[in-house]
Length: 484
Image 1 (cartoon, rainbow, N blue to C red):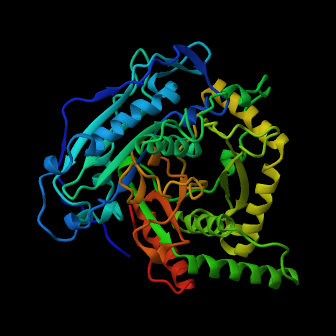
Image 2: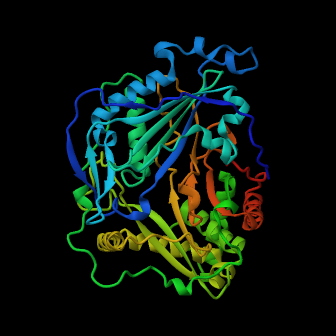
Image 3: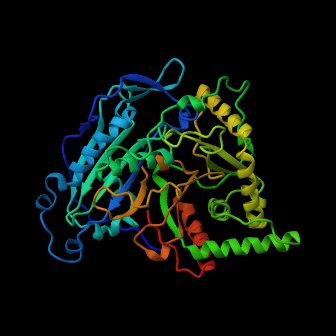
């Protein structure tokens, strides 16, 4: 298992944060949000960094460094090109140039579309991207250098979107994007980023037109009575490990395609052994890997076996509604698909049974009645301002970013997108969160694999690493690397 080293980095940020305004006049109005958007548990900024390798091999293969100012001038400067593209994209995504605020009277969010602009910060780094391995395996403290957390709330509200472009001596660069989860989910963030790239590379407008229409996911009447949690909190398993902000480790493991294939084969065979015949159909990656990670977390936390554990899979609903949401809808459009098991069943029972329960839960949660019942519950969550506790490990929320196109060719005119990483600022204070990411483009051997990002107490991480090593051995792979 790799160890983390704090990378030597000297970053120079410009003193002034620029507010990038829309390139043309935009509507001035107040916009409301959907019931899902209004969930107080989504009121934080998600930060991610996109890593672009230089087009020129000559400046990044051991030849002498060139002065970045002479290499990147005028329109050849990524910061200039991206800033210009932000201005253009805000004509289409004009709400993101406004201010986000929650009404003190009814607790609902609204967006004041005032065209104030998007905070933009430019920085330069004193090294080549290759010296940081294109942020592959970068430590958290260094990763934080490539995003910035703009002072959030004022009397007029907070900015829902912000950017930092960092230029390296090799000609490569990173784009750090901060985006309010209240305004966009992962699908919406991907749509925005791809539109930004299209306009930067010369297109006159985005290929997918953004659609607000948050009223499509608003309930008319919230659930009556007390808020019902998926599982009684008093029945949850407990862990001996205390969770505090200063003892959380963030680690990212690459699970190779071979390990996933072997795991699927093993669990399909297990179904036949236990049920006297092969299961109809097959397991998906999220069903088998989700089950394995859930069990591994249980063991790492040393949870008591007679308590309950909860897996909540964030499930997209864009195409499950009738009619489906428009293709350009960029708001939050997901509900939780829940599986509850006792610790003993999860830890000692066949893993194939866990995968089957996840599969059944997904099918059940695809029903329109279930989806609207969950949205109704979220309205009650907003009314009560109910916040999810970062509990002791008995609950796990799994979200899958592999299908968002985040590491496909998103070309700003330089090509060379090689990596994308979420950055743990506010997002990963939540120990229950687990994210599946596409593999980094730098390593051809990881194609078809999955990066698994977890946040665990320091004392629990060693056991979790053991579990992940056992999975890698199942596929005949080397020990999975830690990326973050």
